[in-house]
Length: 459
Image 1 (tube, rainbow, N blue to C red):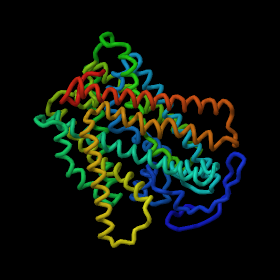
Image 2: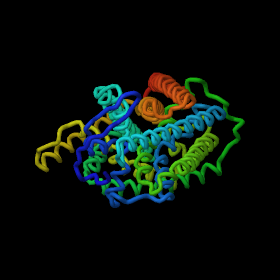
Image 3: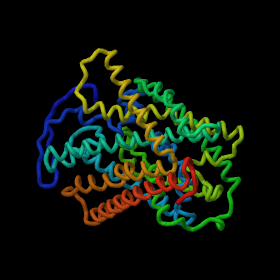
Image 4: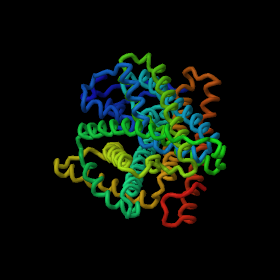
């Protein structure tokens, strides 16, 4: 069952609740290329399929999966919450997001054991869990999960477009950010047409190096310009705190790497403590960036910390580097959405040229869509909050406790664990409703109160 290139059809017996479901499963269906298969695609394009990860490599994979554009928006998230409430929300929601990823891993382990397979994707977990209520229920669960994952990736791409435009506008000036989005549109389409995952992986590796160097430079500035917290409000109101929900959840979306990383760990029994260590490090890094960023720039903190840095040659270069990093990452994030969409179409019998043109058309339409959405909502902080509140919360806070409780219902789920799953689900629903409502209100408020401005004070 480890060879993904061999088509095998076999009969599995899956036990859920009081039912035994006999189903014929194609191996490739269990290994569908969904959002959480991204890291597998990257690794297997460079390394042998059977290559396994050492413990230090797993720590590195988990850590780097969380360090992206989301961390640059955390000072804004802390500002929305206030100097006291903001860090509490960040640490609290961060801990819940990490715990939910652990729930997802536990569920994946159980599914792999029941199905006797070595890998399984997020959407396949949902499908198999809900097949206890019939094949149609499982299919609907799969469609819904893939839709949310695809929407999340497209949301990431939209934020990337807004991020690049804001940083270019800040460094160069002259043009409105919406004009810059139109300017960069053709430059985003060209690399997005690359079909070779190996090339995209190398581009992403360059982006990872840029992130490490850039974060070091930012921390050097923040730690030498920290102001007294006494000048800052303890809270900035309920509405702004709810906006912070989405920004924080957006930053903690690391599910794309966790499942395939755990599956490739040489000694899977050590994953739990590895994930705890890396999770604590990520939360510490996030909290320090959010707190020090807010302490440095106060109520003037913008949607990305890069927009607050001095307009000097050094920091303009840094902004350009981060734009380059996002530019390199954009095609890979888009690749996931394209892969999910294509999985719902029958295999093409077209020629290579026709297939390339079909892919090019789909990718171009998606790039155009992300730019249009960015132009419609050119507010980096509020757009980040909207994506996190809707797609991020659905994938990271709501689905994991549901599928965990469903999977373990008759397989050792304790009353304490059930209550905890319900509690986390309630938090997820609350965050979804309040985050979405607050984000939309903040977006319209800025449009009305500050027409023509894509940045502005909080509500």
